[in-house]
Image (spheres, rainbow, N blue to C red):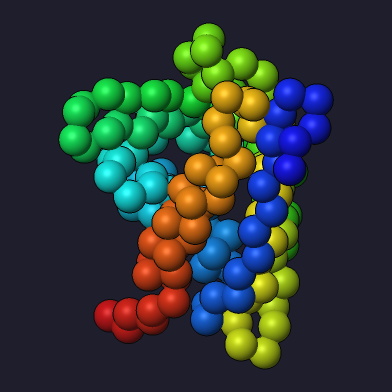
Length: 151
């Protein structure tokens, strides 16, 4: 989906988890480093101030060639267990513009229904590549939040 030189992706998942557990996975530096980087990448959270108006900064590093790209933004909306909205901007000038990502969570009989909408993706990044990356990340998210470890 393309709008004025940018792409938008929309994803939907039902995870066998709780809205709170999924919400926390988006706002914990350790969790984000574990599940957000797509296959072949590692992630480092450099800064995370998880409050409305707070900022975050992170980078993905290609495990094969060692190249990194960093990005960061601001939290626009945080409703525990329900909604997360944040901006993101790449540090690379070849990837211009600001993206907005909205995650909506709702409790359902099977666990938690999650909708992800990412808007303003630079046109040089094909939408299908974004879908592949998000799908890989969401598989890892499921591995993190769909288990209950009682200790």
